[in-house]
Amino acid sequence: MIERYTLPEMGAVWTEQAKFQAWLDVEVEAARAMARHKIIPAAAARTIAQKAKFDVKRINEIEAEVNHDVIAFLTSVSEFVGEPAKYLHFGMTSSDVLDTALSLQIKRASALIEKKLQLVLRQIRQLAHKYQYSPCIGRTHGVMAEPTTVGLKFSVWYAELQRRQQHFLRAVETVTVGAISGAVGNYANLDPRIEQEVCKRLGLKPAPVSTQVIQRDRHAEYLCSLALIGSSLEKFATEIRNLQRTEIGEMAEGFAKGQKGSSAMPHKKNPITAERITGIARLLRGYTIPAMENVALWHERDIAHSSVERVIIPDATTILDYGLQKFLEVLKGLVVNEKRMLENIYYRGGLVFSQRVLLKLTGPVGSREKAYGMVQRNAMAALAGPGLFRDLLLKDREVMEYLNQPEIDECFDLAYYTRHVDKIFKRVYGK
Image 1: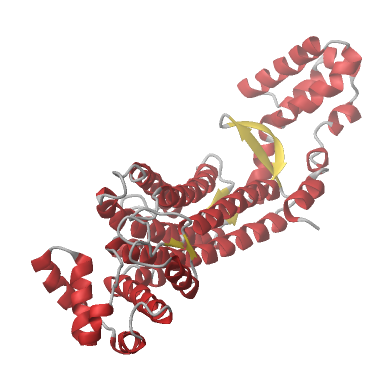
Image 2: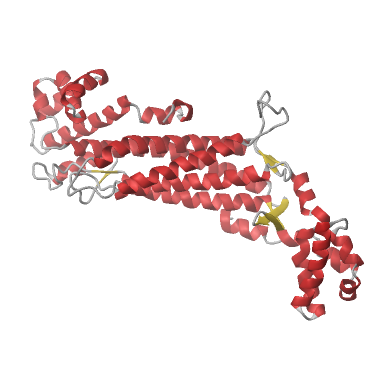
C-alpha cells in the first residue's frame, strides 16, 4: 500500500523485517518443540534460540542467486547460528513457515482493525444518543418520505457495524491457524505434537488437516469480511455525502480552519473524506475476487496464490485500517444541522405528513382510495406551488367535511413519529 494510506502501526506489521521475524519465530518454536520430543538435540535448539538472527539485505542477495525466499532466509539465519543450523527447519517445508507466519501477521493486523472498529462503534453510539430524538426526514428513492430521527439513522449504522465486527472476528478465528505438517501435510517427517505446541506458543490453533498449505478458503473468507466492513463504511459515508448536498444541507464533514475546498471556487466545502472512504471500499471489494480465485490450488499445493497474497492481504488490512481511522475522524467532526432538518420536514407545508392525513381521513370517508385521492391532489398542488400542503388541506372543502382544524393539526405532530424511539434503542443498545 502506498505511504499516503499507511498508518504507522499497521505499516510496521507488514515490513520485510516483520515478515522475516515472524518466520524466525516459527522456526525457533519448531526447534524448541522438536528438542522437547528428542527429534533434534536439545543443545542445538538452545543455540538456535540464542543465536538465530537474519539480515534482510543478505537475504535479498542470496535470493537473487537461489531464487527461493525461504532458502535465502534459512541461509542467512544459518550464518548467525553456525553448525547447529543443520537442525533448523528439520523435516519442515516452506509453507509450514510461510503460512503459519502469515497467520501471525494477520492476527496482529486484525488486532489493530478490531481496535479501530471499537472506536468507531463507540463514536456512532455517542452520536445516536446525542441525536436520539432529533427529527429529520427519512427518504426513499432519494425522495422525502416521512419523519424519523437522526438517532435512528445512527442506530442503523451501529447495528450494521456490529454485525460486520462479529463476522470479522469469526473470520479472524478461521484464518489464524498454523500448520507444521511437512511436504504434503501428512507429518511424515514430523509429529503432530510439534504443530500443536508451536501453535500454542504462537497463539494460534492448528489446522485440523492441511496439505502443504493451509487451505485458502480461510483467507478468502477473511478478505470478504474486510470488504464487507468497507462496504458498510461506504454506505455510511454515502449518506453523509448525500446529506451534505447544498440543497439538502442536513449533515456535513467538519471543515478545518485554513482548509480549502476547491482550487477554483472559494465557496466550496466538499465531502472529500467520505468520498475517499467510498474509493477505499471499491479497492477492498476488488481484493475479494483474487482471494476467492486462490482457493482452487492444484493437488496438495501450487504457488499461484503466493504472488497474489503478497499484495492483497497487506494492502487490504492497511487500507481498511486507514479507512476506519478516516471515518472516525469524520464522525468526530460531523456537523448535524438540526435547524435545516426541521426546515426540510416542513418543506412545502409539511408534505411528508401526507400518510398521517390519509389515515385520519380513511375512517370518516369510508374509502381508502377516495381518501388517498383527496390527500394526493393537495400534495401535488403543494409541490407545484404556490400553496402549502397544510394550508391547502384547510381550504379543501371536501377534506373539511370530514376533519376539523385540530384534527389536521394533529397530523403534523412530530411526536407521533418518535414515540417508539426508546423501544428501538433498547433493542439496539440494551438497557
